[in-house]
Image (tube, rainbow, N blue to C red; front, side, top):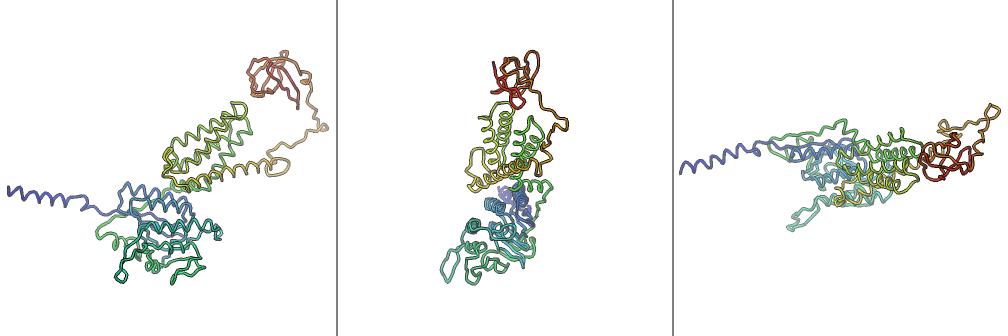
Length: 462
């Protein structure tokens, strides 16, 4: 009995010392964000989060040095950080300006190198000029709500408990709005940018360190640790490029131009191939990211098939054509949003709005391009070499078309080929080119010539 009593604690000690948790190092996953915030950096962060989850990393470190970028992708990265189950730590190596400031504020903790800065998040255009207030209003609300999402702390002031924001939303808003005045920090008329020391003093930095290893060792762990860095591939660069809203709108424009060209020319040709290639380039990165589902791609293909059937098989333009266009547009929009089949609960109204705007922009650009091409075909313009403008003059040996067919009006015969609507008819064992005046006419159907116009016979079913 005594031996058994001694054996139990011994086995517990053995299990403790050989436990995975005792001997395993802490794992930190590092993602570099050292370029302009855009579709490529969004691919980095999105894929990095998924890889960190697979590796069961203890934390994700966002190593930052950026002057900003697009609000659209900064907002997507911000949302991904706020929704991440793995803690996010930002280390600002030099700059976290504009969109970079929004991303840093979304992280659980912010660390900075001495001499680094954070702020200046006013929305500007490509020339550096401030955008209208409606854009600033959206950015103000976004950065304020991001700061609020970090919650509040209870502190003791003069023996009393006070609840204060962990990150003051007004300071975050002052990084966007130059009208905000904060005593001893920023005057109205200036957009707020914080140095590392100012950020520590005002709750926007949890410590100043000279490297990621230094803050990991002094703040995150006292033991051994491993750091795995996300390494972008050339595929990531391509996916990032194709995921840009501008490129997506351009691909939609090419799809629209390809369909228009097929409407104007008989048969399936180069335009269809180009449109399909553009569609593949549009859906491929979205499919890889998990946004475009199989059924959404099938809806696009079905819409394309219906449209082609309307153009080349079914006479006129009716239900099939309209249905095809609707399915194509719906597929293009849904591929951009993170819905699960018909469940749109996880999709924000802003996300749907951005998706619709991207598709509409592409279709509008396609329409404008079509009008431009049409206007430039003729005797003048960029497309004049593609238009037939020559004159056939009598003095050069050209003669008028024979009017023998005019005498065939009211004569009867039969369709020698299918008239869709053009084809050939046989009258008194002679073959003539003809056009069906109404609908399609099957081969062998008795026909009657009803008019002759512009050197062309027109027939109807007898």
